[in-house]
Image (cartoon, rainbow, N blue to C red):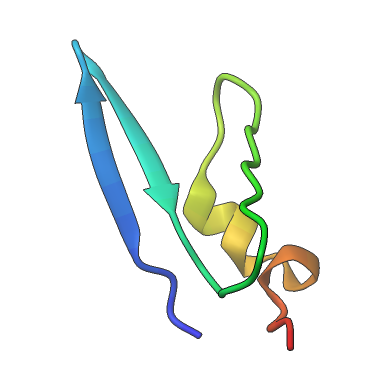
Length: 51
């Protein structure tokens, strides 16, 4: 599954977000102030495909 990242600007700050999968609930994961969504996605645990 390819991660499609979207970006939003808040002043000089760029905020990245990605939506994956389908299901009855939405889950919002907020990492610390400094993080990288691409690096997180490369970790097998959060990136594994859910069925």
